Amino acid sequence: MDETPFGDDELHEECGVFGIFQRTDAAAVVTLGLHALQHRGQEAAGIVSYDGSQFHVERHAGLIGDTFTKQAVLERLPGTSAIGHTRYATTGGGGLRNVQPFFAELSAGGFAVAHNGNITNALTVQRELQRRGSIFSSTSDTETILHLVATSAARHFVEKLIDALSRLEGAFSLVGLSSKKMVGVRDPLGIRPLVLGDLEGSPILASETCALDIIGADFVRDIEPGELVVISEDGIESIFPFQARRPRFCIFEYVYFARPDSTVEGRNVYEIRKKIGGELARESHVEADIVVPVPDSGVPAAIGYAQEAGLPFELGIIRNHYVGRTFIQPTDSIRHMGVKLKHNANRRMIEGKRVVLVDDSIVRGTTSQKIVQMVREAGATEVHMRIASPPTRASCFYGVDTPEKAKLLASRMTIEEMADFIKVDSLSFLSIDGLYRATDEPSRNKLAPQFCDACFTGDYPTSLTDQDGTENVRPLSLLGGAG
Ligand code: AMP
Image 1 (cartoon, rainbow, N blue to C red):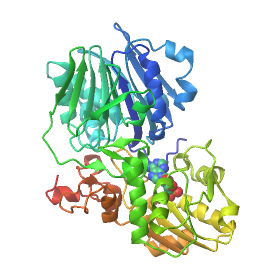
Image 2: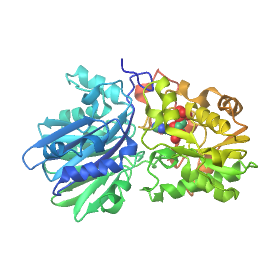
Image 3: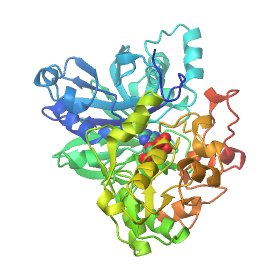
């Protein structure tokens, strides 16, 4: 039996995408890019290359370093253009058939697509297409894009793609490859990141700038929300095919998801996380002896907290790097075990101390519960938990893997109840305005929020067509006329 963290078969994915156009050893470059994006998804990866006459597709379960670095695999991916995808998907099983990039021979020629984000009307569109005879080979929302391109009445490939994307709602940052072109697109709200890079004249598209750094490529610019770039032998063309909307970049990318060495939407992720820690220290001061991060996700915020509070920053918990993210282990029992495998208290640092523990977020509360117990067993006299984001109260439908609402600790409990549950002396979360201040916004603009912060506010910036009737989630900003 497949058991997903959601315990259902909804289409939610965390992903990284990368593509390079006209470069020798394109697939090897994509492998390196995906390796730098591994934090965005560890379950499986795929690469599609084009060698001037045909496409080649390789998709494997597991980490990039364990699969695509094998010579035999790379030899099966010849060509000077390639796109790739790394993913963690919670879609109920499906094995390799759900691994991207998706590839299809269309009337307009071969087309491969790799997608980061989640399309919130994919099931609805899929059902409509199936009624008209489309046969789907996966349960991924991304396949819907291929079918929409295939069935579009528009004449040229780029027009077909625009036609297809105009039917979709939700989050999509995607990279596509045809025999003549590489395309990159961000949804009109720009919920997920996508950047344009350059490696000695070869254009690159990547989820984050850290994937450019690994190969020494230059960062050119962010692809803008609602922008479609068409990369061909003629150069780079920029099109804005969608109705302009006020951008709503995902604020959780800054809190947790993006790598701290990436610069996203003009802001360095590490710097933002440190500022978040500073805001947190100002908002929720407590008398203590040391500040200890929950590694690795709590480290930059804990540094910011310690600097602002004037307290020593200590590595009071040591992480074993050879264990994946605990959150993504498939069953509850393994998730519990994962936490013990992953973290150990550094007793010398903690014994007899009043400890401020800093982590980026509480989702189910499992991690915090175990860590707090570990820190107490190591002799801490007081444990004060400080969380570098507001309580996670609502599910993400845009591509970050959060469990269903009922499993989110903050949707079931008050802050005092949560403090009891994780057994801390005090528990504080950053306020939503504090989080916005850390991104250099004065506060959250309630009528026109500057970010997508639905996981903290329940304010979804698009309609959630596939959810209609399943959950009472009304996009407040649509009702409020924002966007
Ligand atoms: P939990 O034990 O469910 O409360 O998980 C909280 C931990 O999971 C925190 O330390 C976060 O760093 C991490 N986390 C939060 N969101 C995610 C996510 N979408 N995917 C993987 N890990 C996450």
